Length: 192
Image 1: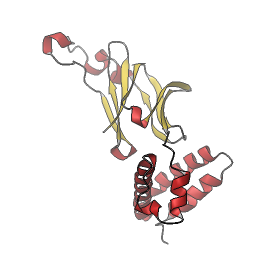
Image 2: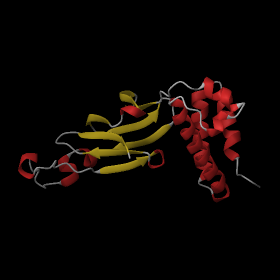
Image 3: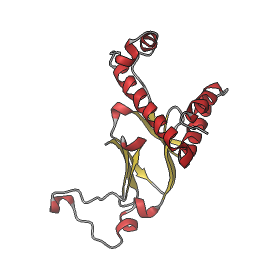
Image 4: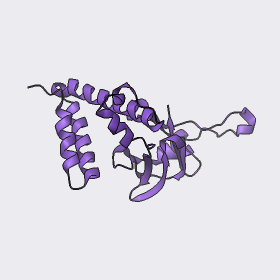
């Protein structure tokens, strides 16, 4: 059985859901889950290529310039309808609490006073980019580096903080970094 376009049916299912955002979130989770199977590997690569093409087209459209793909009818009408700038927001949450949100153009984004607990980073569409439970050993200096002395920046000319966690997101387009502090950590999200 050919699974090259398995993602199309899943996207259609998500778009047809009563709650489109939740339906697409579930569809994307299914696409990724199936894409890990050898039988769907080629289809998953096509899906990633599809996303990259849509992203490139959207970037051009946000600048008001139709690309070659959208310059041909009937896609030119789609370009005209979608020519408004994109406003996707990235949300950083701790449990049910919103710590902050920013647009892609506003990166890097930094959240201070990060303490152990459940966190997630998601798009305002509901698509979860990262989710995890942060631990004290990632967020405090003594948890991360034990008795290692903390040198003052003035004595070395450099910032003494070292990242305890780095995670690429969105296929390497973004990077999540955790930096320990004396009592709590700092979470930074930046473009790579």
